[in-house]
Image (tube, rainbow over all chains, first blue to last red; front, side):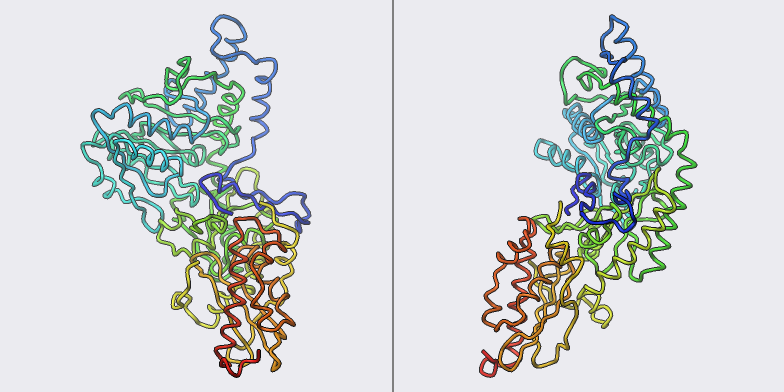
Length: 425
Length: 132
């Protein structure tokens, strides 16, 4: 299954058959794709579908005021988790829209003076595609490489900035490998050069402490569905002092201070706010618990299998992510084998290009190793029992598929598969 | 994407997994695909003095459809002459397994693997000696 941005990451193992864990459904281990709504979030949202249904922009009656009050509370809750002011939060439909608005909005607003943007090769597709779109206009884009651990080099970033640069866009946490970029250091460099710093924090909010002022972040993309909130809502933080200006993408009634017209979805705003409130309150304890589960899983798999490699830095990484290459076993075939767990693969057997994950390739991984990777996402509702079951399940499936693998056979015979002249197909 | 029942059956119960001695004169080995592309198939045939494929084995690195395609062809080639086996078309494999368009390349690779195994056998045994 081809993983294309988040859509590709959301490919669960859609395979029928009896689940040997005795469950009707596979164990969900794809928390970087999306998360279930926390029941507390759903509870908070429910009244806003029915009795409190008002249009938050209706300024002249009770229903509107009630909805507006709820939306503004949510805005404060969202602002609080990133150390911002509520006035700096613009609601959007999700991180894809936020990234589009930040990148195209800043580029277009400042186009008379500046025409250069700096970003990174491992960014989410919606950032890269927005940049490609701008390249077709008058803009120039620099795509920074990453090191083997997935992190950028600060000196390369600084060297890339010119007097024509309007924006630096570097994601906070990578969606495939979970690595955390040095945000405070990047922010300091951007501030020093008078360049706006945008970060796609879709995978970071609620997972790691974020502070837009301490980190000198000027724009930040957020989304609700990665932190146990509803799908269909996100936000863009836009700094007010010093002020960042944007050209809007969606025109209309001038809601969201003219930056994003359209009636706000009150229940989704409320859910997003509640999700942030919970995440902020529980972040420290949840991170510790997830780190324990993550280490248990990694150590268990490594103890059961040789030739297993972690992709991306382990230390500078969110606790809920693992991305592992199981050498000599193709990822999509492996996903079919681990049908009791729902994970994603960095392989891309179904794509026309047969290209595996561009993120893993950017780390310098061989295409063959990128084809053997699984992304495993652990989250709020993952239990120790889930992890222990998954270890055995993965070890069994990999072992079985290695018995089936001609590459594993060659490896055991001491043949270097790189020494063989393979025909491309 | 949901897999067809036949693909799942071959994936979960692959037929004829294993290897013959490559050096054995009666064995033809086909190794096709590339690790960088995410698919490698090794198909081996054991040919009788009468030129009949008596046995076949495979090993595959790839997705479920690739494993199923190679498992299926090991069943199909058994009992066939080399000429008959060489006539197996990828379209028949794809049709039998109900492969979706994005998985057609798996069936193409399986057809290539048969042809490569036959070619290897013929090369070893010489065009004159090879039982036809």
